[in-house]
Image 1: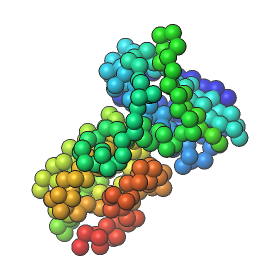
Image 2 (image 1 turned 135 degrees about the vertical axis):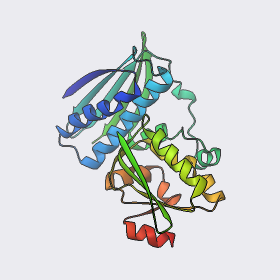
Image 3 (image 1 turned 60 degrees about the vertical axis):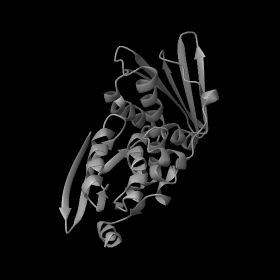
Image 4 (image 1 turned 45 degrees about the horizontal axis):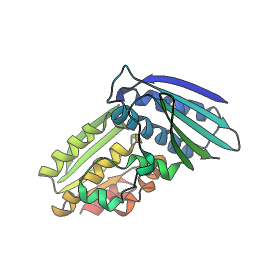
Length: 136
Length: 111
């Protein structure tokens, strides 16, 4: 089953994204704690794209697709046309580095990497495409 | 989105966080913690009605850890739901922050 939604790049819409993903997952009877983590991972990617790649510009859009393959995996695809994120050069900081630098950022992708089984960033035509895969 | 209440009970500063803390609402939590750290020595944070926290909310606690330690402030979180605790646990934060189940345990940890 595949569901899709398109939303504007405004941080205020993050609750709507979580509601959309939550409804798709709950209609597929996925365990609540696992669903909560998947919702969080999508929220983290969308927050990064809205804030960093699209500068919170509400005229820009994110397109989110959730494909549930029962007893196999869930595939989340998030497309945008903002600044491309260079995942190949991303180096995960340690939690100790973040604590000592007293900064608030840097934890989002750490969470996504711990939740999802695979994360891919690609660019096709004018779109950045982030794919998150969670095995069931 | 998020509703934060603060009170003082027997010398302990209590911060109650209700609702959802994400990238757009974490600033309210940050402002509350920041101002508490300026004046308080014993702080407990009631997360029983926190339904959701993202990295932006975790970042509020992590970013103040050094200040909490350098000022010798005691800060205890309590009442986390299983789903919220799991989010803290993904980054190993229960090893860095004092997290207990109930308010009574939080008070005991602070006294």
